[in-house]
Image 1 (cartoon, rainbow, N blue to C red):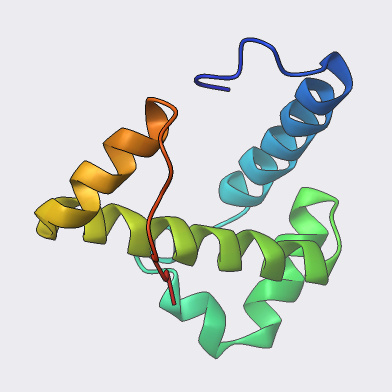
Image 2 (image 1 turned 180 degrees about the vertical axis):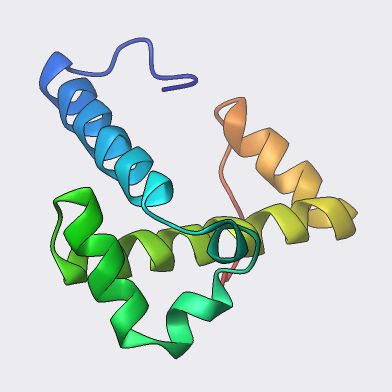
Length: 103
């Protein structure tokens, strides 16, 4: 948890548990699915297989995909938008983030 020095231990534990689940979901994916997450969105049977293989529920796999897509958007914005990059860097230093929309 980068930049989370003063985070409560309970929150850290919850985050670590979530990361373990995410890791098991990724390990349950095929190489093609790892390269192209869109394959999972197209097929409910793939999501069911990953949930079963990772010991999680289908809605947890969907939540993971949603978080992945949001992070992917943010990374792309960071790469291609200097204004967004400077806003994000200010936020990381403790400043406020302007009127930013990720969707």
